[in-house]
Amino acid sequence: VGGLGDVCYWLAGDTQEKEGILPERAEEAKLKAKYPSLGQKPGGSDFLMKRLQKGQKYFDSGDYNMAKAKMKNKQLPSAGPDKNLVTGDHIPTPQDLPQRKSSLVTSKLAGGQVE
Amino acid sequence: MKCFSRYLPYIFRPPNTILSSSCHTEADIISTVEFNHTGELLATGDKGGRVVIFQREQESKNQVHRRGEYNVYSTFQSHEPEFDYLKSLEIEEKINKIRWLPQQNAAYFLLSTNDKTVKLWKVSERDKRPEGYNLKDEEGRLRDPATITTLRVPVLRPMDLMVEATPRRVFANAHTYHINSISVNSDYETYMSADDLRINLWNFEITNQSFNIVDIKPANMEELTEVITAAEFHPHHCNTFVYSSSKGTIRLCDMRAPALCDRHTKFFEEPEDPSNRSFFSEIISSISDVKFSHSGRYIMTRDYLTVKVWDLNMENRPIETYQVHDYLRSKLCSLYENDCIFDKFECVWNGSDSVIMTGSYNNFFRMFDRNTKRDVTLEASRENSKPRAILKPRKVCVGGKRRKDEISVDSLDFSKKILHTAWHPSENIIAVAATNNLYIFQDKVN
Image (cartoon, rainbow over all chains, first blue to last red; front, side, top):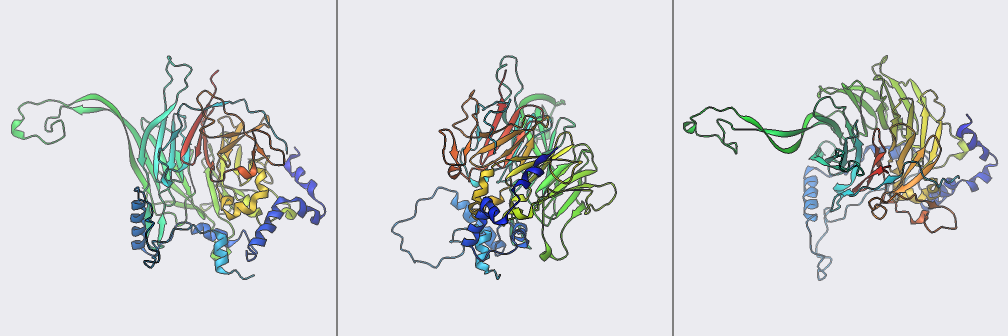
């Protein structure tokens, strides 16, 4: 019963050589190049806190009910946007803005992680 | 890496119809699939909080070559969206898990859960109705007593089969965090529900109380390092259960001695070579599903890139590791950016524990034969699902030269993910959920 434990260890050797071999390390370097402020402790609290906090947050129950009503209206077939509509006609409200799914990478950038 | 090109003994044949909703909205996305204990019924839950139950046709002597197909048996709205006023958070109606209870009478019972509430549903048939009431007319309106001159006894007459689903129990307000698993105990009297930090034990008869059996919430939330990702009871030993974590470990607990099972009886963890560690290591080691084998001797875990089989008697490493889509290792950066790296794939055993199955991207799903060590990649798609055709194995090309039938890693559609699959308890029938479509494949009739 040799198993996979034995297979893993043949890669052991010079660490510099290994960074060239491991695709994960190359991917990590890519990610760090794009987002230099990405935290030191990747698997730590931030991921998990985001996971625990899953679900769309609303300002209050009124906000929630209005968003639900708007979704119901959206599901009805609607005409395309009026091309003659003058832009800048009204000040946008939070309801008008498209819902954007937040990703951890964006939130960290916005948060300005201090290294 | 070895490539197995020959497919398994089971050659799956696509059904005559693919069950899907005609108009695909977000609510139609299937979020769980589960056969009942006999395989006669197949339940699906979706993002819109609905449950659809399919029933297998009885095989008739006239149509020997047509195996029993699954037709819609019942559908009902299990959960509705709610609003948590204290936290100003929406509680999704999405059905996270469905688990069947073993059948004990003519009715069927199942548990369905969303993030916060578990419900016990009774699904029963009605094929007779009473007719000839004294005091009511045929529409049920009360008759004028002055017009009643004779006495008659109502009779039961056959009617068109009606299947009704009624909520029998609602188990609410026991979870602060999001429920990821439910599991029925082999004693058929209790079940557990697990969220990110806690596991509760319920009695089916009691809805206003549950026992907390695992609590991994740290006193200071800043010290949080891992969460519970899945949990399941042992199929035969009612005192034993396992739960998996986001750190890639599994804990087995015995409820006989301590009331609170925070200290595990067994701890399963594969040692990691520290020089292999990268930013992604912990994320891809997070276990998204854990399942006991039918025999109860093994557990299977699914992490982002592999499926592992563990022997309950050996805690220090798995006995088998299967690569699901190792070619994604060189795509981890973009998979992190588009959040796909957090996708939670499930895994299933076949009835004899000899084959395991799990999903992947591009509507591909994989099967591994534990005995012959062969594996196959199949696709759940309409083009490949002509009736009486055989599912053709697919292959992903990693390197330079791409053969005609192969697909390159860069062409994979990551929005087409197969997270949920199910295997009939005794036959070679599988259910594969591909977004809003449900594919049921059966093996070829000899």
